Structures are given as C-alpha cells and as structure tokens.
Image (cartoon, rainbow, N blue to C red; front, side):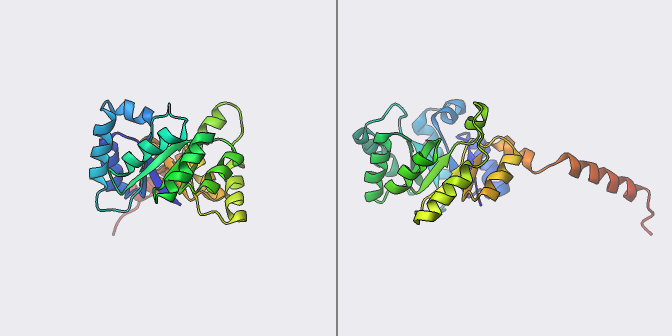
Length: 220
C-alpha cells in the first residue's frame, strides 16, 4: 500500500519526503487555507518539491464547481502546471462527466468525497485514476466504515476497473492497518497520524522491560 501525505504545508511535506519517502501527496482547499498561503503559491511550491519524480500530487478544482464544463476547463489549466498534478474532482453528476472528459485528454483525476460504492463505481467507470473513499467522516457521523474499503475494492476487481483506492480522512494508526487489510492501494493521512503510527504503548512497555534488563546486566 502506498503512503500519501495529506497536507499543503510545505514544511510538513519536506519532512515527509525526506524522512519517509512518501509515495505521493494529496491536498484540498482546507489544507491550502491552513498553510496560510495563496492557492497558486502553494501548488507552485509543491510542484517544485516533487519535480523530476513520479510522485502524484492531488490538486483540487474550485469546489463550488458542479458543472462539467467549468471543472474540465480548470482541470486542464491546473494539469498543465505540473506533470505530477492529479486533478481532484468532487463526487457529483457533473464531476463524473468531467472525469470522463479529462481522462480522454490523458489527464489523471482523483474522485474525492466518495461516500458510497455507487459513487466509487461512477468514478471508476468514468476513468478516474484514483478514487478517495472517506473513512473518518463516515465514522464521525455514525456510519460504520468497517467494510467500505473492502466493498469498493471488490467492486473494482469484479469489473476490472484500473482505478486505485486512496483511503482518505484516515485519523489513526488502527485505520491505517484496517484499510491496508481491506485492500486500499494507497492511504493518505496527516503528518501527526503517521508520526503516531510509528509507536505503540505496548512497544514502549516492552522497551522499558528490555532497557531495565540491559542496565542490570554486565557487558563483559
């Protein structure tokens, strides 16, 4: 499973690329807002950071756009800025039509805010390179995501679609493990989620036992 960083903060991206060799990046309008920089400035800086690599960077069109023509026009313009850019399109009727048109142009797309297998099917059928089912938000509002990723993967495999699943809105280490077991091709999460996933309280306990034993044992 590929690891993507979900962030538009360049300092976080630089750290993740250097320390963890992330496989790709995902951004969204909220991440850009949190970065404190203008949209065009942020995506230009990120494009420079991944220049010369094959790491995909999901960049979202204006989320107010629901008309296919508007989405396609901006999608083409953004895609021309960097060969790494994958155009992120919201799940809606116009969005799926836009994914189809952009795919015909050879532009990779990421269907975002996928909340059902039916939406995932529309995206895959339209030719989306990536499909982003949101785990955390479903869980937050009381809709169990336990079989969501597995169901989407079953659908893709059953009909031979080539779209890759990016498990999105992942909030903790358990969810990283869950989506990996369920068959997600990629997972995207924030910097702190990955940092927390490197440790476990049981590991810390075990380290304490071994450290205590080491300290009480002569070396020679």
